[in-house]
Image 1 (spheres, rainbow, N blue to C red):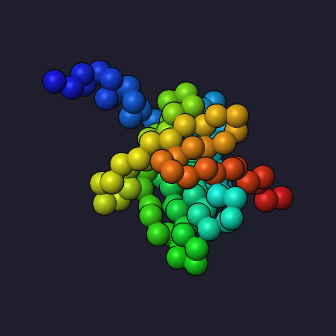
Image 2: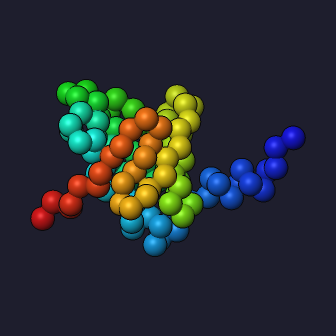
Length: 98
């Protein structure tokens, strides 16, 4: 039986300090996959020339990120040393545009 307390804690809104470290554009080394994590808890992922290939919501708990896309597909990731390891992807955060 699932422990609902664990599930609820895992899917809470990002805290301000957790969110600040995560919000922004994350990109694979080849630039093919670009995932924007927005401050409102939404994400928009582009694949190659296909904009908004995947969209959905995200939550952060510490260095752990949960994604639920708009079709219900779920994925998780972890940030280690400034790198987002998301499923089989390795993404680096882009510096904000001035």
